[in-house]
Length: 230
Ligand SMILES: [Mn+2]
Image (cartoon, rainbow, N blue to C red; front, side, top):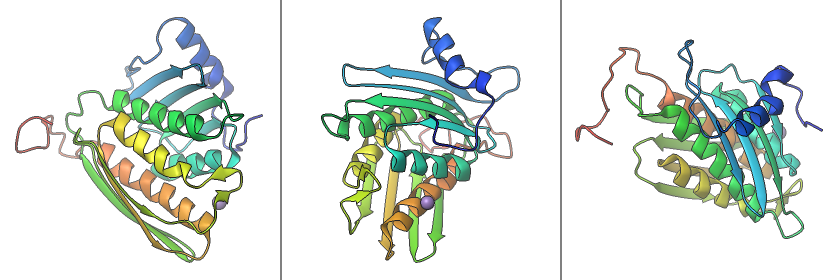
């Protein structure tokens, strides 16, 4: 069952993902007359299967289903605070371990953002946020420059959060960074509670990415780089 209470209408959920994928539209950019930047991604391997449907100009609506409850919870926080719309359904070989599934969710999500951003013209390109959650705080900076780099400075005191193995989170962010072709710096300098550390991180990422993905208010249509290209 879906582990969320904030559902999109069901006709925009996994049924629509499945229909689109069956019609060969997997991975297509779905930008429509409404001008919203959208993407549809299906990644299927012998180990995992992930479907994702993303709208950048969202309202923080989501329908998320992964076999790892805490990962689902983190994606909820990310989408809610980034004000994207995301439907995502993941299955994986948890009988092996969580690595394939967590990594593929990161890759599919990164691909979805990459496709929705298209040629990246007119975007702010960079974004950052400092998000506290009670005793913890997270610093996240993003550059959608197509230069791939992850700085990940997060230490957890426990090996698991719910069922999620905390050392898989770094693989999630590596995969996301590679697929989105971007630079992300993450630091969670303190926090007594690991749940708060992780959640502040995903909230900060949502806010930072929202800023980076947003179109410049002056409606410039160039590449924000002195090189003229990314
Ligand atoms: Mn929470």
